[in-house]
Length: 328
Ligand SMILES: Nc1ncnc2c1ncn2[C@@H]1O[C@H](COP(=O)(O)OP(=O)(O)OP(=O)(O)O)[C@@H](O)[C@H]1O
Image 1: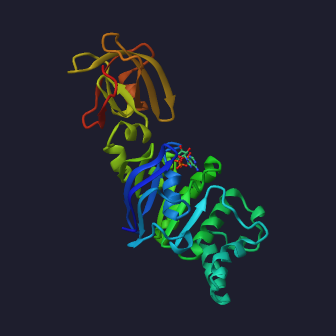
Image 2 (image 1 turned 90 degrees about the vertical axis):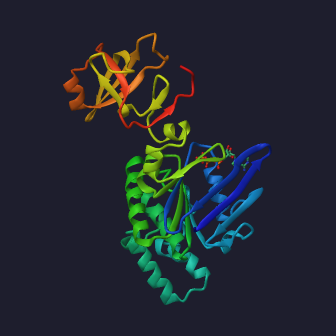
Image 3 (image 1 turned 180 degrees about the horizontal axis):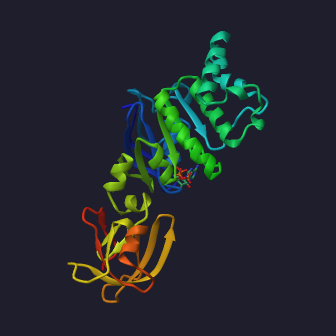
């Protein structure tokens, strides 16, 4: 394991920002720390980086106890959302900075910077100033700078958070490809479940200072450990005593299905190739909220469903369900 975090606790006054956190992050993987705002993701990342200290617990990096090591001795590279670039230096100089302060020979610096700029697709911008780059290009420069000193671990705190949706998406794909080429153990913080699902090999879900679940994107989606994880990783609706994904609700237009919940379609919205329904259950079965259902367009068409249709709902065979928190 590249990073081992054990029994980590961090308090601010009486408030537990991290509460006995234990995680092992494997070498060479791209791991996302995912969770809602204020959950403790950045605090964990900063403690791994050595920028913050824990009240209790240990951090080891590549088998070395790093708990008391200063950041510069941990061999980690980091990139934050609003990365402090050196505005008065060219792109190439920014990337060279870490190597130069380590007194790397000039020829070696030149070679390495050339390689890195190629890796992040910025070779043609080597002599520009950072202000002449787009936000996405600047973040790629920041990544090249972090990678320059060959860290064993790369830590990224919402690296694409400040960028618009399209650039974010491009950088996400690019980060995945970069990681496939370089294989440096990478941990990135995000509150965006889609970003985590698309990019990460492994996701650590953090909420209220605790780890809710660790697993691959598929594991988390298909076998959520609890209601929180299920809700955080995708849309969830309630059908009687269980909560499940809207596309896992089976719809029939005739009665007679064992355990089916009868109801009426109160909303039908076509979104691309899907049809999204809201179904108000009959009062004797009803929770207060309507059930959300997602069908493919062709399926909705074959059932001939429209506003006001009477339907019977069941959980599809093999559906992932968790018990609903509230009593029926
Ligand atoms: N220096 C501090 N003093 C007091 N409370 C703090 C301090 N730093 C963080 N906290 C609190 O600790 C909790 C965790 O913060 P943290 O930044 O780790 O959350 P996060 O999951 O990264 O959230 P976000 O996605 O909003 O960045 C928050 O409730 C925050 O208010």
